[in-house]
Amino acid sequence: METMSNKVEIRYCTQCRWLLRSAWMAQELLTTFEQEIAELTLQPVTGGVFDVYANGKLVWSRKKAGRFPEITELKQLVRDQIAPGKGLGHADRKGSQSIAQPLPTTHEPVSVVPALFSAYSVRPGGQMQGAVAVGVVALPQASATPQMAA
Image (cartoon, rainbow, N blue to C red):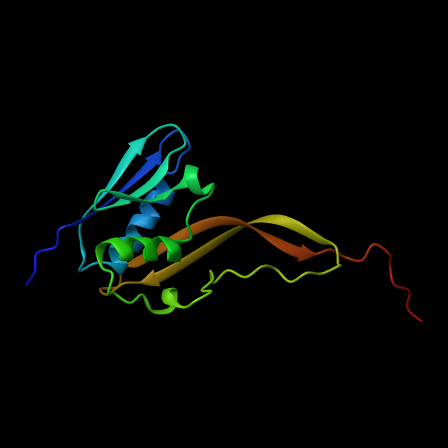
């Protein structure tokens, strides 16, 4: 069996509080490349940095790109450096987009309200694992003019 020697490094700004983003992207990369990555390092830095290196080569720079990478494009860039022959399934399709779709356009007034979401799963052995997230929900507003019964 061939020894893995691929290294990925994510440098993230602690002043900007990008630890969770970098940890999530690290988890995604480790899950996708579990047989290819020998080491993944999160390196805290300052100055608005969010850079990703694969085997010492810069594959993503937030400052250069002007944005954060979508996870599918980051996986493709890392794959191109550490495992060029590896397929990524749906992430390799041309025009592959995030599963999040924009809300349909409507001319109805809406109220945006804070919401709390939770999800739980039961792990083997009966242990519950849960997560909570905070977000917003767009709700239709009641009509401004009362309707008269005929």
